[in-house]
Each structure stands twice: as C-alpha cells, then as structure tokens.
Amino acid sequence: MAVEGKHTSIISPRNHSRFTANLVAAQSNVAGKQNLRIPAQALLVEVMVLSLDSTVELRVAELKEETLRRSFDLAHEQLGMFTAQWIQELFDLTMKSLEKQSSSSIDVDMKIRLLDERAKEIENKESELVLVEKKIKDCNFELACKEKELGFVRKRIGVCNSELQSKEDELNLVKNSAEKWPKRLNLKKEEQKRLESLDGLIRSYGAN
Image (cartoon, rainbow, N blue to C red; front, side, top):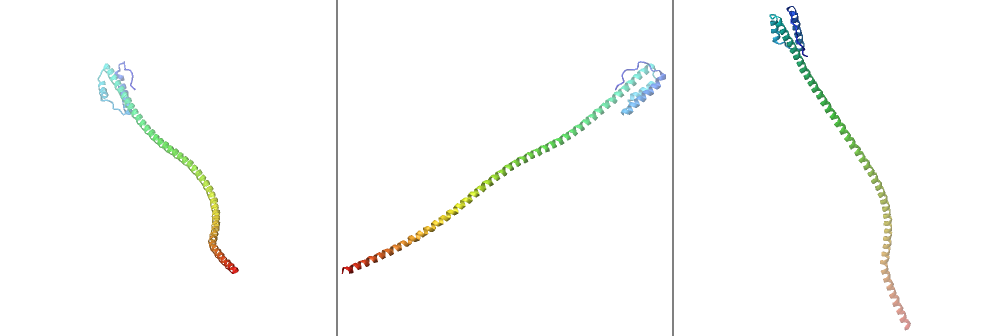
C-alpha cells in the first residue's frame, strides 16, 4: 500500500537527524520484513542531506518519501505475486485432489454399475432356471403319463400274444387234424372198396 501525500513543510536542521534516523529505521524495518533491498539511491541521499540547505532537505525528504513509497509498492507487489503464486499452487493442489477424488468416484460408480449389471444377469438366470425347472417338471409328468400308457399297451400286447398263441395252437390242431383226414379218407375208401368187393362176391354166390 503506497504512502499518500507529500510533505509541504521544511525540515529544520535540528529535526533533521531525528527524521533521518526514523526514516532509515522505517526503511530497514520494511526491508527486513519484506526481504527487500533499499536502493543505493537512498544511501546516496543520506550523504547529500548532510550538506543541503532547507530547500534541498525538503526535496530529499520527498525523495525519501518516494523511495519509501516505492519500497512499500514493491513489497506489496512481491507480496501480491507471492499470494497469487500461493493461490495458484493451492488451486492446482485442490484441482489434483478433486480430480483424484473424481477418478475414485468414477471407479466406485463403475464398480457399482458392474455389480448392478451382474445382479440383473443373476436375476435373469434365476428366472430362466425357474422356467427350465418348470419345463422339466412338465416333461417328467408327460413322461410318467407316457410310461403308464406304455404299461397298458404292453399289457394289451401280452394279452394279444396269449390270444395269438392260443389261436396258433388251435391252428396247429386243425392242421394236424387236416393232415390226418386224407389218411382216414383213404382208409375209408379202401374199406368201402373191400366192402363193395365183398358185397359183389356175396351177390355172386347168391345168384348161383
């Protein structure tokens, strides 16, 4: 912050030493706190003040005031630069921290999204599994019904096989009987011939 205004009164030689000492002390204090170098011009002015008259002393005082003002301005400028640099560094650190947190937040959100997708996939698979189990139960019921029907069919086939066997046995009997009939018929025919021959002989004897 710059010092406003200028001195309008002439500094007397009696107060010159005190003013000079105070001004130098103020410059040293400011330079010590702000780590600034007092320009060589201020030291030169200190030497010149000892030999100048009252009018020149006023100019010297003004120069010292200007020097002090510039020192304050430079100090504030450096302080402003330091503050701006510190704010920029703080801003950079804050941005890096926020970016890191944002990256971590994105990773967490991605993991949560993946977990949700996996949970939905598991739910879909469970629903499909329920449908498959129901289908298996229906197929098992149909299979049991078919096996029951097959049992009835097998039983019916067994009955039919028994009937067929009986018919085959009857047919064999008929075949056997049919095979015997020609022999019997031949025997009957031969017997009838013998009877006819015998009857002819008997008739022949009766006629004689």
